[in-house]
Image 1 (cartoon, chains in turn red, purple, orange, yellow):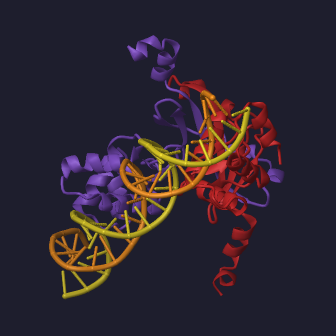
Image 2 (tube, chains in turn blue, brown, yellow, purple):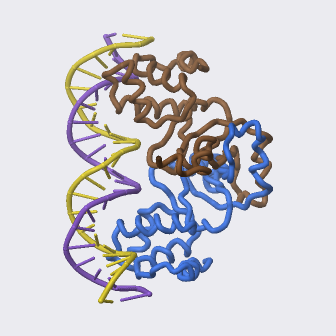
Image 3 (cartoon, chains in turn cyan, green, blue, red):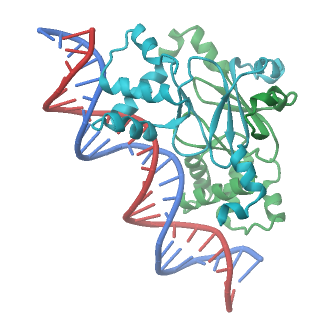
Amino acid sequence: MSDLLQRLRERGWRMTSQRRVVAEVLDGEHVHLTADEVHARAARRLPEISRATVYNTLGELVALGEVTEVATDGRARRYDPNGHRPHHHLVCASCGTIRDVQPAGDPLAGLPVEQRFGFTVTEAEVTYRGLCPDCATAAESPAAVEG
Amino acid sequence: MSDLLQRLRERGWRMTSQRRVVAEVLDGEHVHLTADEVHARAARRLPEISRATVYNTLGELVALGEVTEVATDGRARRYDPNGHRPHHHLVCASCGTIRDVQPAGDPLAGLPVEQRFGFTVTEAEVTYRGLCPDCATAAESPAAVEG
DNA sequence: CTTAATGCAAAAGGTTTGCAGATAA
DNA sequence: TTATCTGCAAACCTTTTGCATTAAG
């Protein structure tokens, strides 16, 4: 919970029941949902909400900078409700879980100027990959997974 | 050019004219193409090659670790022919161009253990974002862009 | 009251799949 | 010869769009 709704209201965002529900879903659980998952959760509270509206709303939140699109290797984009503060991602190569982690030091410093090819670099985003505790345990004793 | 074909042969990959062309396209230009772009370039040399085969082939190269899927914010996945050696990406926020850059130092060191949530972290991938020289120039004198 | 958001349904990408025929080893 | 790959076309999934209706401010 981080008062996403309040921030949106302060910014003069026109509020509707659909938008409120979408914002609540995002603000409630700080996991990284796909548009479809957002729609499913939103529909629990507001059954008539349409996918189009969820897509529109997510797009606007991204444009406002309140939510970030996370590019994953899978098919569907995921939405990160923590868009208003810089952070990096820790993703499990096995189950796809994503956790936010805090930057330690400035990653921009890691790219020497002569490696920038004339680019004006403004931000750096780090994705750490590995196995989450559950998947790591499963990998050690594969028998426990299958049967 | 980095002898992708040779590496594939050594690994016992069944070679066909379609696969050869796909591998040559990837190995030839070290840019990051979409599956459709790979298909278009491959079709110049082998007109009857199908999209399905290109998709299948790219999927196999990814499975072999010779090519990496680059997660972008756009719709289509891009394929990085530099999969056999670690590197990071420099992407232009305006035109989407991607360049490979070399890691400077170990980014893994940037994530303190107490921030790992029990994950077994094996790799870190940095995406630097900014503007490429062309887009930066265009941004300074917008009139020059529109007309 | 006016402007903007919603829902529907259809369409537009991008990617995957089943299967008959072709081909590398 | 035989296991594997290819091409086709249709299916699938995610996302976008046009337009009439509805609702916020």
